[in-house]
Length: 164
Image: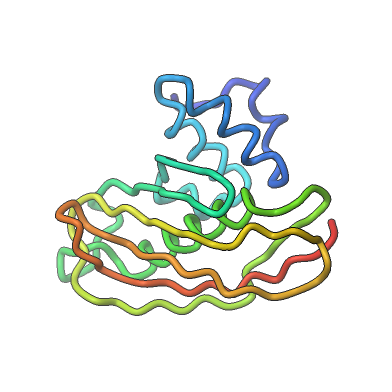
């Protein structure tokens, strides 16, 4: 899966993330494909190789497998890799929650690091479903947990949304 099929790349549109997931979630490996498409939208996010596990209006779960290049000198997942996953999970939850003709961009990110992160990390986010594309800012909160279910960090992302 080193290269995405050309017909999929034309669907890489933030406003279509929910529609695309409804198709890919039915396909074997669809979560990894969706993660690759997210990496096309936001190339830096692609460096953590996200895998979408769940996506619905107001909810997302995204997983990041532990890899050597994501680790720090303490042999745990690097803080910025965790921030990257946190931005990704809040981002797809937010995008899946927007009405048509709306776009969003994070304008502030903050993260609390609760414990060292090791192993596969899963980000979960629940946010409100947005009814209007009127300009506004919203705080979206997500949690990152390790394989045992322990919270390793919490992210708060402030998203500025408005008409596209």
